[in-house]
Structures are given as C-alpha cells and as structure tokens.
Amino acid sequence: MKVNEPAGFWIRFGAIILDALIIAVPLTIISVLFTGGLAIDKYVSNTLSFLYSLLTPILWNGYTIGKRICGIRIARVDDGTPPGLGTMLLRNVVAGILYAVTLGIAIIASAIMIGVREDKRSLHDFIAGTEVIRD
Image 1 (cartoon, one colour):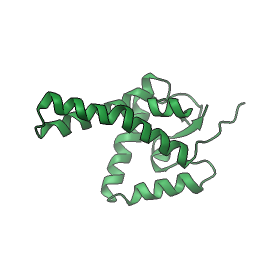
Image 2: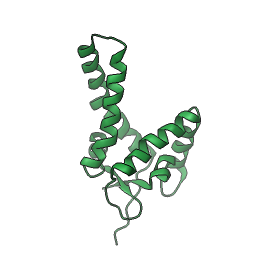
Image 3: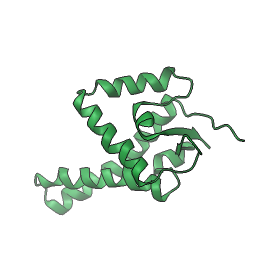
C-alpha cells in the first residue's frame, strides 16, 4: 500500500495563488466586460469561481489548475480516490459557512493546522474527509 505524502502549507498556498492568477483574475475581468462594470459583475465572477473550485477537482481527479502545476491534489482520506460532488460540497460550502460564522478565525486555525499537524489536514479537510497530497 502506497503512503501518500501530505502537501504542506506553502505548496498549498502557492496552488491557491496560481488558481487566483490563472482563473479568478481573468474571470473577474471577463465578468466586468460582459456586465459593463455593474454590481452584478461580482456575483458573476464569484459564482464562476465557486463552480470552478467545486467542479474542477471532481472532473479532473482532485486537481485544480494551480494544484496540477504544483503537483498536489485533493484525495479522500479513506481510499485516496478523487473527491465526489458530496465531498466537494462539504469541503467548500460547509467549510465556507464555518469560516464565515467564525469571522475568519477558523481560516487562521486551518492555516495553523496545515503548518503544524503531521498529516497537514485543515478544518475543511476534516469536514469533508479529504487530504491534499503530493503526486
């Protein structure tokens, strides 16, 4: 049985930055161009970014573009398989609600958990039963 090496804080942070630069910034620019800079442009870009972060790991075996570039992916803890829709909904929606309810304190706790825990799992990893591993 192959033991997966967990991805640490900096490589995960780098993947998030790459996703933001490659996906979120262009989506924002495109939504501004299509909506003429109306207030709806934030709704459009936020919706598209949410769908990207929710669906891409399902359709691309646990990868987003940033994660693929960094050589890391999301996997289920129990069997190492890519996440499904329910898993990604838990990871993104439920964890997002937790982060909002705690006014961001849980995000800081998650970052610390990734930095200090041996398995490098954050709160949203525990909620969804996932881990981020190196390929």
